[in-house]
Length: 111
Length: 114
Image 1 (cartoon, chains in turn yellow, brown):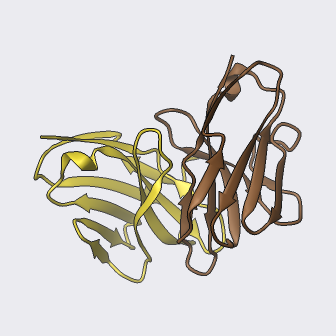
Image 2 (cartoon, rainbow over the protein chains, first blue to last red):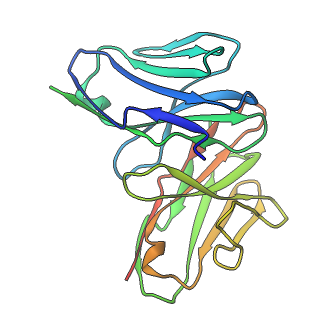
């Protein structure tokens, strides 16, 4: 059973546009929600993370929106650039335990 | 944060042989994990590497096939034993700190079994 459901599987965005990737979860014990960025041939890199006590976190062009009641969170990439083309994974974790990863979204930003 | 390195970065191995992957962290981490990632797929947790004790394996993974060692807080190894072509995958090591939940990944080891 997939603990974290991620959509879309792939996304194509024009340069300068907004990329939005969504994730949903069921386990209310999750209390940490990171997003990872992975380029081909590289390991996943921590991009941004949020805890459920806040509804939004912004770091540069990257924003996480968190809806605790709906058990959903999303990654927004503002002013998307070709260099943002990568695979993005959401994840969730209950305190002290393993991470559960989404299935990944392949983002392509067209110049 | 933590910087994680893995050796080898890639290898091509024959069926029936074994390969040991090394994972080195530049700081003492609370937790270390081993994942498998098929190209274009998500990450599947193999096991949690426990310092000084046996690793904790996820369903579908067994110690005889994937023995893991973690002698200290900065180093771990994963052995893929008696390999078959189905073991061809990317193997990722990760380390993290329980106090802030952050988890960092190594660059991965790309394994091809012929």
